[in-house]
Length: 306
Image (tube, rainbow, N blue to C red; front, side):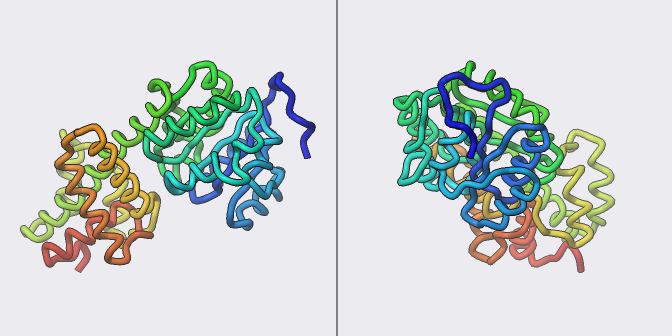
């Protein structure tokens, strides 16, 4: 165990990381490689054992992590998971101490980020909602874009740790603002995946070579990261994740619910949400988000590769 926490932060903060999934494990590993003492917790213990073998320390509850660290990260599947880990039995709140900073890398409802921040503020804990973008590749290569909501002074304290995770760190505003930025990011990502799928299916069924179409348009106004990166994988028959479709669907459902709360019309995002939800209904949730083309292929009665 680390020495007991006192109210004065150490020069090198002790860091905790909860949630060692596809991205979380890579982020935690990069924090460890950067020289920060690291305590890890995860429901599945194999990921914990892997990082312990590399120098991390294990904990068995979120509260046990919180008791040992200055900064605690969470990276969990959905809003209820974050609320449980932060505020539930054996959660972070049970071992909260003044000066602790909670940083949530998950993508959750902005309203929930605000609720968690308010509850922990009463315990002397500052919260940053800091969802990330860049997928598994960005997590492994420490090139994530990090969107931050919460107090500036907390961001300043966490900034050296963020530098071990990503290349773009943007303070968007107060609590919940990071989640709003991530939702906006996911509106664009989903739109690009669907648009790419549509253009490939359109080219195929209308009688042009989709690979040559992509080559023709990629240097013009249609150029984007999605068109640069995803088509070669699809043309090779590879629809395995990068960024899983079920997570894209979860993010879109958060967007639609938030839009409903604020009375925001999102007609394109609503259609994209239906397409990604259809992937889940057709057993495609574990595939890459670019595999939404499979739903479009079914609707058009054509296969990209045939």
